[in-house]
Length: 479
Image (tube, rainbow, N blue to C red; front, side):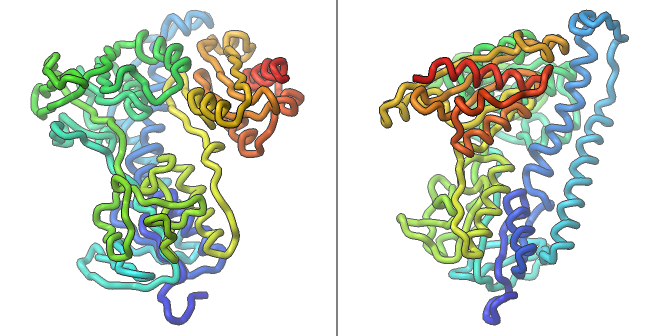
């Protein structure tokens, strides 16, 4: 029940996965909850991110599989030329978005959460201002306030967006047309996934990366193997160390590429379209955070591991933040976990988040996934704590299920301590890598040792044996 002097026990600003999970969990625990959303329920993930993009990847993946005559011939299968309807693929994504958005909304309503459609902002301690869609502006009070306002695509200086010929992932998921030649700025997970989609649908792709290597956010060993299939074997021209210093929409789109270090013009391209996939920035500009003394870091709201907002190393009472706006791990499942933890702490529990055990996945064909420390981070930790780092690799080409699927291009890299055997991280490229990573994530969460994990029995023949082999190889290095 809400305390008499407050309108609500908890107000959540933003109805993405972080806000949704927080509001639902709080309502189920008996709190009086309101959630404020200025756009569609479900936030970026449901409407403009992971949900529609996975629908497009599912469809384009089927097309790629059916069009791969060499792969099919290995099974003795000869398929007719593949035909597809762009609009029906787009409709598949849109229908999925609509269904999930409705389910989220109904779930909140059934839980007793009051949904307010409008723009939320902080109006001092334990007060929230909301400008509703109908124009009404009012202030409501709450014992606790949780900010889950999310993020927006980052558009670098010099790039002009028109939403049609030059666009971000927000527009790309609509799949309104298929350009003959598309340039993708950035080769992180968003750029890679859309390169997978567009190349499968017959588009010529040029990938432009400002850093010194393509796929810079991935493990170097994984990149070396994965890029052979995801880039080199496809109609994708990858350029690294070049800055898209100026992009002007039109027919064609003109791109000026400059040397990253000297900023001198190196090359000009004329393409049919450009997808800007250069990361995301926090949506904190209009939250009026200064009214409560919160200082952001490049727009990100500082928090502790309990999701309390901090400023100048001091906790801001009754103010919490989760999701992309915190800049921790900009993933939907991270936001959801943060939201639940924040509410538990509001209820008096003492919970903290373990970022090391949260996995990440890129849904290309094949997939890439990771969890825990990178090799560089693990090496730094080994020097700090004076232990020897162990690294083993397990290959899909030795796995019966992968061979049966004729999908043996893949590797798992496992990082562990040679003294205790504790698992520190893993990086996987291969068939269903996004599913396989969960087992290692659970092991890291429990701080388990490969000594115990190697004794666990895995189903044969399954891809999970790739993980089992890695554990058994690691045990041989324990000192």
